[in-house]
Length: 280
Length: 54
Image 1: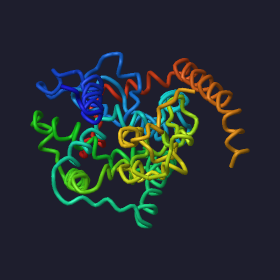
Image 2: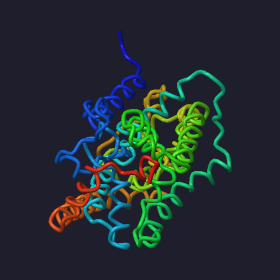
Image 3: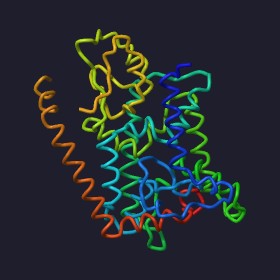
């Protein structure tokens, strides 16, 4: 039996999810991994407080160090993100991100789908840059709480990956944590629920509109080693690829758009075989 | 469009290599100046802000 490329991609996403969250004992114990690999950033948005997490979330690490040092950016985290970005670009989003996998699976639930990519969609897509600069960089770097400490604003007020991947499993297992649950948790849980529900109707709403890591990797799409290419000799401009693209990328004019997550749906759709992955 | 495309093709490899080298240097500096250790210190403790408690 030949597997569809989409199924193969989901399987790869699942493998990476297991790889980044391989500390299965943590889920049973309600504890997190404390080994040396926690000092290494994973390429994806994967909360380091997830009981299974074997590495550190680059967005969480970036905020923590900015908050701790009063605005001085961590060259280590920056280097890590640049390394993943220049090699893979948003392949990370399409093939490696656990939260991307969750959204992909939710979108498979058969029901009404909102597939229009109009003006509102374009405006909302710039939100992720606001999230990146405001919640991940500026506020953690310059705002101090009453104890004089900076905070990880994105993690605290927005990140649904933290709520779903870390908050819920830990609260289920650790009673001491359950007793401390308050308004903030219910607020974050509401955000996570809204994103989960939206993911059933809209393809990857978090990636399109809110993910700061996607915003960074998107900037590398044009120069990354892994890119897509349209062979103009083969292309008949039927735009079947653009109709199939769930991310709403204008493939014929800008195939290496910041929005492309490299899922490869356009490659599968093109009957002319005009779209290929390239490493040149 | 043709000129931009040609320029992109011409400069893409130097840009890639420059970014790659810069990334490796930054990671090396980061490890040397203790960034990696600080990341680890944060990551081995439960982050109450991340899970929506603190």
